[in-house]
Length: 165
Length: 288
Image (cartoon, rainbow over all chains, first blue to last red):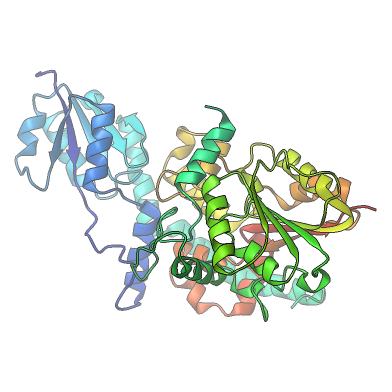
């Protein structure tokens, strides 16, 4: 092991993903904008600065510009996955590659755009993947939407009976 | 550094501009306006008013504020004037206006605004917990979205009531912990889905994901519940009431269930807004 700390940065969020103005207000665009807004991903310069704060002598590796980054992590003492958002949406390919190159998950951490740092164990990875599914699918929100629509007439009837319009 | 100084410094660096980013003076169309200019104030006011459209009638906020009951003989105080929009409207109503804020930038900006509009008013820097006025000075005291940033909301309300004349009116808006916005964005989305509950407690979450949440949050925000707000105001006011304002609901729905807000008619959103909106409006009159 080289004794080094390598920070792996990837940016799964295209520049215009959360564009303030969408040219076509289709459901897909609304979904995209909502996903981006909620995730609030940080950009490369922010993550680079953050990594430097936590790991003064660490090496920041941007996977977009270093295609052979997998080789770099093979000998690193610690690997830090730099999630631009809170839970690493879009980071599954990176995580798979890291685990393929390094079976020792104990040396892998995450540092997020919310400024949180945590160890990546099997349980945490499982939790992250579940939360990513919930975030992308918006399943709880869709269920809420159904409840919302069904309950609205009931609340309306209650308000009207009390003279509230 | 004391908590008060931390709060003061943060708001001085990040004044409530209603811009695209908290504390910045650029708005949706991309302009980066200069603080203190007429253009900036006009643009800020337009943005602020647009966030509260249901509360306006012939004048901004006249569905909430009893403008017609207070005239040139009336002394009105705003606690936490920010960049002076509401103080300006009250001064235009002809009252003897006093506005205070902990933030020196707010004081400077409100003074600049009053000068630009040729309005008279006393604009002073002070802490809401220790208002620098004698007892029973004012006929009406209001505060809009401010004292939930105070580490001592109870003391802040006590001071509002102290400087109010017996029989004087008050109106206090604070954020609502029993709101869609808080439950969904702070507790579910950030607390649970984004794992923030593993790292920070309820007060820190409310602060981190309150004003300035897209940057790093602010140092102190504690939303109240309607009952809590009533419990704080009621000892001073026999007719104290609380009302939930839901002018945020459209935005909350946009990010909760994309498209749902667009599909629902106004009357359908109203039934939820009046129950689970982001703001609590506590109002009434001081005993006596």
